[in-house]
Length: 283
Image 1: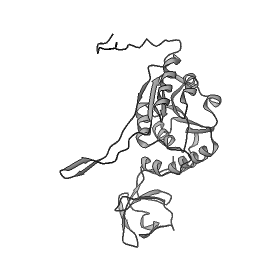
Image 2 (image 1 turned 180 degrees about the vertical axis):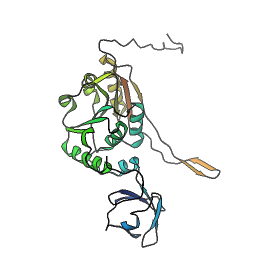
Image 3 (image 1 turned 135 degrees about the vertical axis):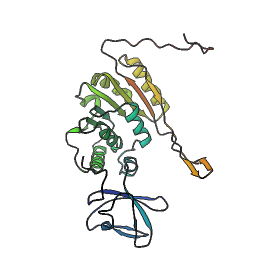
Image 4 (image 1 turned 60 degrees about the horizontal axis):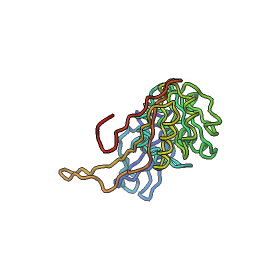
């Protein structure tokens, strides 16, 4: 992974410039490059050699704060072939599916490559991610976005397969399977065959009907623990002295996540215990 995360800016680095109105621009530094805006021009040479967190001034007098962009900023601004998984959901997938350094991960429905970037960072150079994408045009966009963020080809720890997961999968004993598609329930059996005992399946779906179908298929499959379904909502807060209030806008519903763990072969999950109707006591 060739993308530099710290140190003075160098030619080839991707830099995010933020103006006083919080409008952000991402540029790739070149020795003779110039960033043009209606507020004036900024030669790239004004940035090369400067530390992160510097302020540069355009020829029109506007000041810009310069940092390397965060992954969350990059994924929201990247070119899209398909809709991207929002950073709030990608970070929950990494955390709640326990994507760890060295993990072997299968991803189906690569889209524009946003989640792939998060997964590759989480598994690290010793891990491996295989991404399955049915549509070649989406796969091309995803490859370009991932390689742009990481500064070049990923080498041996990423494999991008154009094809259907059910018919193309050839991995076994993988640690995690992440499904981002319209009908993830169609891939539950293939995921079960690929996962090692104790592995995690994580499905990202947009609607309640998709969530319900996914949960029921995982529950009825017989190889998984009871599925867990939830969504994450993010609300910013305005803080100015004693004027503290929630922002009027928030990142609300983007999708639901469903997770379950692969049980050992031949093991039947214990029956679920339900509360009887009309009482809060456990059976």
